[in-house]
Length: 433
Image 1 (cartoon, rainbow, N blue to C red):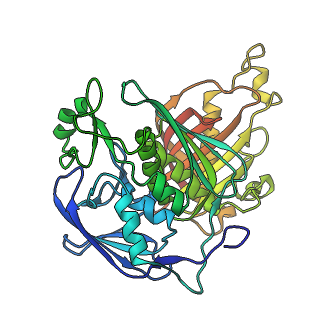
Image 2 (tube, rainbow, N blue to C red):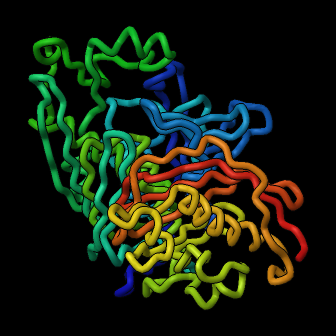
Image 3 (tube, rainbow, N blue to C red):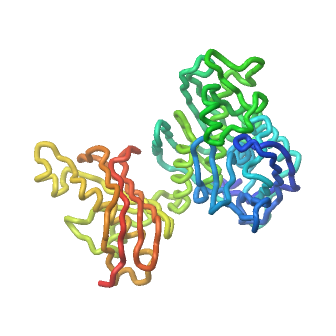
């Protein structure tokens, strides 16, 4: 591996086939892992369905994150992918086709231990003439999603810390830090089994979940302890399994990670939110400079003082997503009247700032953007969560929901220090000047 973390891509040396039962569906399933060419990525193929649809294991394919991570496109779905993806990540398997005869991989014993053993048995090989670069973090940032909070900090390798806190006598508060590398991970994290409370059983079954869960593949916590005959593999096996889930979900970034991920009360939904943020950073220059500074922004949009409300573009995925920034200072002209003794940024200007970032995303889809202008046609589901004051730094994240001709719909979210302050769904149209 080079000093900047760049390395050759990898695949399996030989195939792996395994039969079992799905954890959530309870259906008999077969998984076959096959070596794949450079650039394939990690992909699932539903060979039991007509046309054998292919699903890429990336955040763009995520269709569900409630009690498992689900990939989906149309009627084709693959669930409970995290227990398999984590071992593949740890061994640096970049290219593999996972053929599934069923809607999820086998549950095995509810952990990733057997997958580690099978990968080692199959062998791993570098793919000559290919390279893959890691996603690196140059400055700490925070992601909050529901009750989950994540701090992602710079680190030379890949380290994960997880903390959980369950009001249950068998679980309580637990925390573990681990380096995500094969020997440590396969010995200390992969054997940790999935778990659940006995009181959840009826609710999960009503949703068609945990139908394949048994006392052999799931640690079941009863009202006052653990199910009879249950022996933990680690005193803190619960939080260790949360790390297994986290590493599997973060593999949806689609590249190696160089960072320390600190997760408090991690969840599949939160894990995928972090994966989306890290994946978007693949488009950011390695030295941390903005993709568009203020001089470049002035070339693309017609706004000028005092109505230019975006300072930088930090991240950009063409046709999909943009992350813009504005530093709010006491020198903003609107604070003179809103309000002199209690300065608060008007909500309508926060939405306008989001719209300007969205305009940059939309303009990129057209030739000769200098000759065009973006008109916003409607705003829906506008919400303001908390005031924005001098000293705040706004991050605008805009996602393209639909683009037809010159008209598009976008979802916008504005955050300050990781907290959502405003959100809206916008419709806009590109017009000639």
